[in-house]
Length: 266
Image (cartoon, rainbow, N blue to C red; front, side, top):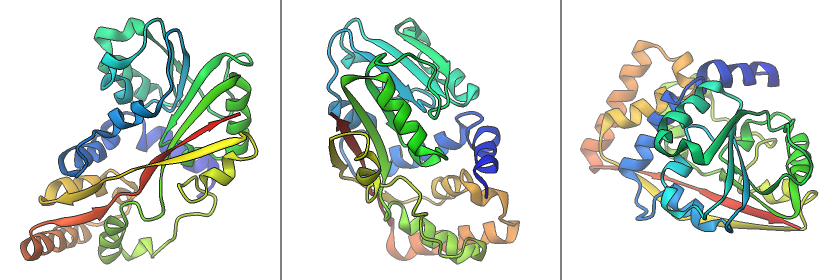
């Protein structure tokens, strides 16, 4: 799939609104083993102070801020941006009672429409692997950050949700057993990609796993991905059979989560 067609798929199908993302979030919220919510944990990693100028790229439906409204320092100027207008509308709806504390803008991370040194903090939560030309994005992020600013980039590792990929492979041979692209942005290669732009890069891991005990939430997760575009009714029936059998035999399906956050600065 070309970069252009990939971006069109993300904008027009995958992230035209928050429905697919919400299906995936539901699985994590219901079956994660961590006692600390992901968005609360991420927020704890930030070094925010009163009056901080903050840009989030790919903010999606705004859950990071919705779950941390009680922790935002006073007088912060927070710009939530996404390349999907549908996602930004979801964010506005989710933050409706507090919307005055935020501004919203459609932004392509490869061409950020703000002046140099406009922000103290830039955040990219699980979105950089969607950016076709990350070098351009990193250049733009570095440009709009003030010299002592910090960039926070969350992403996944290679083993993230491997068991779900294995289930899909058993039902949908079209997927092959593809390794994640070497051109992706992961816990394994993210530091090397950030190094040309930042003199200090630290990776922090979020310890968690999924222990799934129900069929339909797992099926809904898979249907929120590209698999939905190509699966047949027969394959979908096979998937439900396999998950049902696994749960009957073991009581639960444990799924690896490998995720974390890079903190980058000069």
